[in-house]
Length: 314
Image 1 (tube, rainbow, N blue to C red):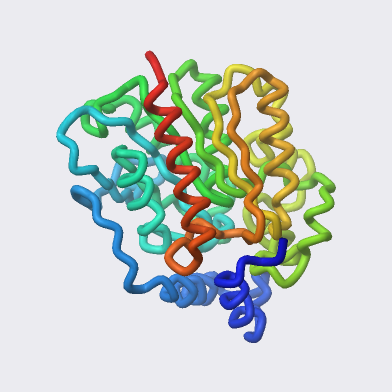
Image 2 (cartoon, helix red, strand yellow):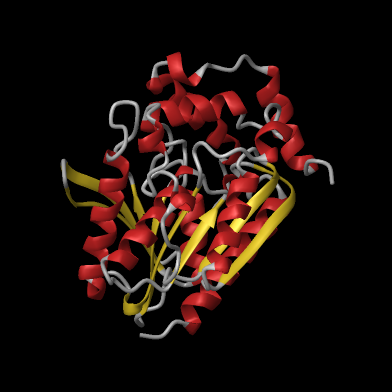
C-alpha cells in the first residue's frame, strides 16, 4: 500500500527542505523545527473535562507534568503518558492533542510527563524521571483517577521505549500495571531489521536520524545499548508483564523491532494486541488532525486500551 495521501503531502514538504543532522545540530534548533511541524495541526480541538499543569518530585528536581481529566466524577483509569521525540525533542505541548485524545477516548486521567532530554541529559535521566512520575502516580492513585487496578503506561517512539522499560521495572518491583500502550516503539538499539534499510530515507525518520539519536541518548558502548533499560527486547524475561497494545507503521524504520517486541511478549505469555498500520509513517499519532487514516489508527489504539483497562481487575 502506498503512503497515505494526506501524510504524503506532509512528507513532500519535509523532504523538500534541508534536513539538520541531529548529532551536530543545537538541540534547541531541533526542538524549534519540531514545533513548526506540530503547527500544521493548529486549529484542531479535543475537549476534555479539565487540564492542569503541575510538577512532581524527581531525582534531579521537580518534573513538569500535565494532568488531563475526563468529565466523569467517578473513579476512572489512569494513564501515565511519555511523549516521543527521540529523547531529544518533544514536550507537553507537542503531544497535547494526543494526550487529550487518550483522556477523551479512553475515559481516563492522563498524566503527561516532560522528562529531562538528551543530549543535555542522556540515559538514564529520561528513564529516571519517567519512573519517578509513574511511581508517584501509583502511590497516590486516589489523586489520579482513583482506580488502583487500572493504571497504564503509554508512549510513542522514544516515549514508547520508556513505557516498555517502565512496565518491566514495575513488574520487577511487584507493582500492578493493567496495560502498556506502545506506539512505534524503539526496542532494540543494535538489532538488524529489514525495515531499517527498507525505510531508511524519505519517511520523516531516517536511518541516519536513528544512529544520531541513539548515540546522543545512550552512547556507543554495546554493553549499555543492549541493557534492557535501553533495549527492552533484550530483557532476560518478558513473562509477567502488563498486557500490551502495540501499533507500528508500514513505512517506519522501527517497524520490525516493534513487531518483534510484540511477538516476544506473546511468546512469553503476555496478552498482546498488535497492528501494523498500512500507509502510515513514524509519528502518525501526531498526524491524526491531518490524516483520516492516522485518526482511525489512533482511535483503534484508544479503543484497545480502553477495553483492556475496562477488563482489568485487581
